Figure 1 (cartoon, rainbow, N blue to C red):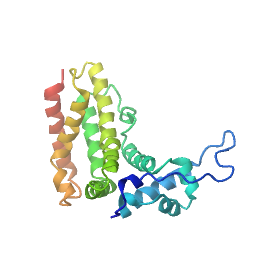
Figure 2: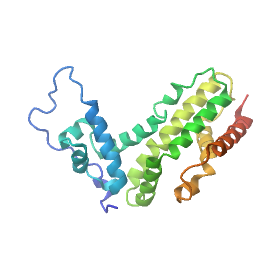
Figure 3: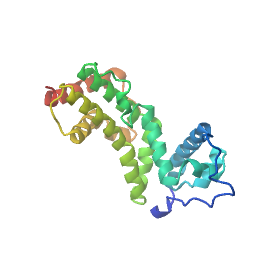
Figure 4: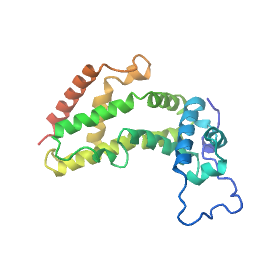
Length: 227
């Protein structure tokens, strides 16, 4: 992996080209180019580690470096966006987990759906690979490792916390420390498989086994917090 110093991970924006910043009124930035940049950056972070350059991202996305910077102010922002995009694929982030879980769904079924979604995210091959990149480079790039933790696990926890708050307000769960309880639920779901997955001993879990495990997790959680 790269031996780049952590302070160099936020590359400064290049000098603006003549006329840059004077976009026509109502002309939106290309979502296709933004998606291409995110895809290229995600792949490069996995292949080259956290030292992958913005120049390399621009080349892989087939856009100019200025275009990359028109969407992302620097590498920190781009890296965060890659992580946010991945957890959003599974409904987490910006409390998105609330959008498609009906508040009328029984609390046990809602929590089971949440833990299913979380474990699907955890076993996503790109997520597993990124965890390994972060683990191997955390000592060299602690600030970026912290950014990953805040955005990925932290964003997931925040979405689960929003769901728990909703269910407390509905009188289904007793008042709780949302931050602690959200981590507790996720750790209960993940804990059994954590080291096996990180060590490459498993790549997946049979659906029936995983569902049985998660049903027990939800039962144990509700034994503590259900009204």
